[in-house]
Each structure stands twice: as C-alpha cells, then as structure tokens.
Length: 167
Image (cartoon, rainbow, N blue to C red):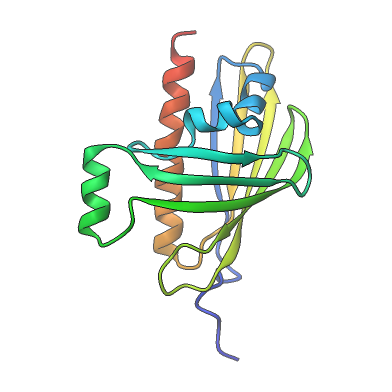
C-alpha cells in the first residue's frame, strides 16, 4: 500500500525541546493560556502572533495570524513567493493547570500539502523557584519540515530566555 506523503512516517520520532527558567509554573502556564501571554512570545524571531481567539479549555479554539514583522523576514517571505501573514487554527486538548497541556494545530497553510494535525505537548516541572518546560512536537509530513519546525520553536524560545534572563 503506498504511503500518504502528507502524513508523518510511522517511524518518525517526536521532537523534544526542554528549557529551565527562573520562573514559576503559573508564569509559564499563563504564557501559553492567555491571549496576552501567548502573543508576547509566540513565533520565531522576526515573526509575531496576532491572537484573535484563545479559549484555553479542552476543545477550545486558538486562532491567530502568524505575521512576518521584521524587514528581513518580510523580504524573505516575499522572495519565496509566500504571504507575509497566514491564519493558524488550533484546539486545546488536555489542560492540567500549571502542569501539562496539549495543543492540536491544524496544518493547512502549506501549498500543495493536504491539511493534517500536529500536536504540541507541554509539561511544566516545578523545581522550587525554577521551572522546566518540556515541549514535545509531533513530526511534520516530511523530515525537512520537522527540522524547520524545531528551528522555529527554538527561535521563539529565545524570547522567553530574554524575558527570564534578568532573574
């Protein structure tokens, strides 16, 4: 039976990214689950998230526009023939306050690729004044996109690193 090129191969491994900051679990939780918090850090360097809806309850909607907002990223997107903004839709799965959450993204903005879902799982571990955030990203439809997803996520974490560095 032929494989579906729009789906990750069964053997593809999830991507795990972990950081520990001088922050409380509540601070990190709020950065994921509030409109203001999410907008303050989501998106790789050179991008921002304009959040329209964030209803952090199981099955609730997250809708935002991912917007290139630096001259370099705007030029790069235009040079690649890509829009400088695109809507993103996701829904919340599991939500265990200040401990664990799941976000299910609809990947429907890639030209020529049928839409599919990509899951982000987040675990917050309290170390008494420091919190570890462990993020597990499900693989994308092809390894190159998984690599780009990981790089983008690592890039947006630099926004949190800057936020918590002064502590």
